[in-house]
Amino acid sequence: MTTHSTFAAPAIGAFISFFMVLVPLPALPAEPQTEALAAKAGSLADVLDGVTPAVVNIAVRSGSPGEANPLYNDPFFRRYFNLPDPQPRMSAGSGVIVDAANGYILTNHHVVADADQIMVTLKDRRRLSAELIGSDKATDIALLKISGDNLTALPFGESDKLRVGDTVVAIGNPFGLGQTVTSGIVSALGRSGINIEGYEDFIQTDASINPGNSGGALVSAEGRLVGINTAIIAPAGGNVGIGFAVPIAMASAVMKQLIEHGEVRRGRIGVAIQDLTPDLAQALGIADTKGAVVSSVEERSPAAAAGLQAGDVITNVGDHAIAGSTDLRNRIGLAEVGSEIALTYMRDGARNTARLRIEADRGAAEAQMPDRLGGARFDEGSGSVSVTSVEEGSPAARAGLRRGDVIVAINRKPVSTITDLNAAFEGATETIALELVRDGQKLFLVIR
Image (spheres, rainbow, N blue to C red):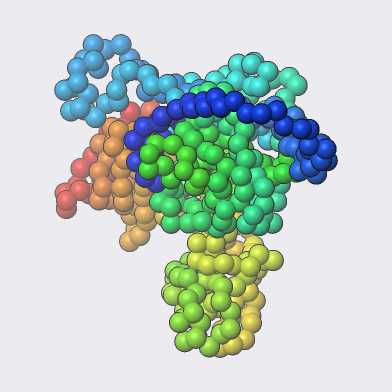
């Protein structure tokens, strides 16, 4: 977790206090069962010997000035033109080597966001430059690549089989102190609504996680990676025993897409869903207590083609039992676009199955946009592409795009879908003319 991370509650400060009380005590006789008890309790030291070389420290430099124009040092000029602060920022986090042959490292998106330079320090103190393969803000997962010999990778565990009470170990770089190991248990599973990122299925643990631990490893007692440490609830700026990790099942699905596409291409089936509550279950006449209720089905969507209807209760995706609407959203959203899935659902007391093909999520088009339109989100409809939001300071904002703009053509070629928009940028020359409608008026926006 970077030293400037945003937590669910604002961090006020971090304090380290040391207390030592010296009280003379009489010598005690040796306890004959001490060694036996220690052997019975066991130690994680042998497991950690093979695990800790796979956990790395990450140093990030971001926000360095791109040009030497003296106007960039003028605060008014920067504010007026929405330019970034010219002073570089340094931050620290953690990461986990998951593929030694290819040098792949999993970490958090917020650790490496806006990075100009990423340096990785291994346990043996080697410092290596890292390349950002891809990053996904919605799951807070990023993938780095380093080149080095004799790397150690941490094998994946089965986060879907974790149980509350299982022993886990958190390894990372808290407060930039260097590699640190803390232990605890799984406190809860399937946590959501933490308001951290868009896709939430967190493992909650009481193993101490602090700023700088972000991107580090949550490891089972068997020495397998079960989660990527992500965030804490920290009302006083430090650990209070409530930490969260992205399950490795979710992180590995994101990693696969980042390797193949450099981005996450989210899927959809065209339904609006909500949790199955006891009252809804009674009203629908079903005995299931877990699942996701279909509240509406889009026309001409995969769900409509498969025959799904409002009131159906989806209970399984393949062999995975659905706990609620968040669980279903995660499963569909991270499924490979174009792949087929099997859904089990209840209707009028009968259990049914359907096969659906995952289609691309039009609402998550930001990651698919050309670099010059980065930071903008788009939607399509009525033969045009509309801008639904623009992040401050993003390439799209600097290009002059605004929320509510409707793009109708690029270099005089009509644009009616997001696919058209991408294709137009791929074949365009260095200078691009966006024809758009803003506040009822047509205008051209030139992007270089």
